[in-house]
Length: 321
Image (cartoon, rainbow, N blue to C red; front, top):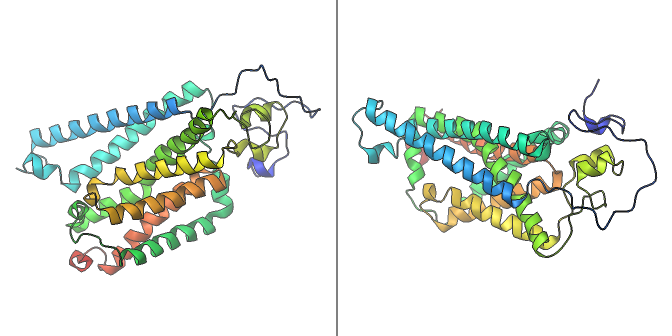
């Protein structure tokens, strides 16, 4: 029997949510009632990035200190270690996993509801549209690779240090396809995008409204018997200016995250900005963070797949040039 909320009868409510009362006449919104909680709001986003930066910094410092003290990679200088993929990639992977576990625990306790549920992970969209999303990620990657051939990209970039040996490329490929997209989508499309949109409308004096049409959050409205089960996954009704601002700022932040790897060159950063806009639109259109994560992972995976076949299984990296 299927457990997808969208295929079950209306009274079905996922674990952790209160059962819906019998259908009745819709109550008029109380103008004096306290506004519903916005999850995530901008304070949540600041907390997320603060914890993430601290954990990643501590993980990196600890990893480099141990590597230098034990000479794990031989007699390399600190400057060489800072460009060493065999140290950077495992350090980043450990940092992402540790930060993710800590943040999951913090926000589950803070929100008093499942972490993935509150951020609209909504994996049912991926189950229904898996092949469409997969094809979209591949197509996006191919289009970007084609257009990049006509952009003024510098001949050498700091990220080239990650493609010196076959082992390095395998590490980067696995990390960039399976782990980095999850954490980056969580940060940018899970927290930053919705909190910026809500903050913009709040500053403009617009009350928080659910897609069900009531002045309630989707979960609060569902418990009051207002929307259908599908509306549990719906985002708030943000204004168009709020969406434009949040998508733009989120994409700028996403591009700047990779700026050091790309030597701050405007052309590759502009490409990442455009890719981020697509991911933002997928997240908003599908109401699913899982959908944008799959597109992101497929986009990265396609790049490494093309590289794999173009270099005979990462064995002839000189062909990259």
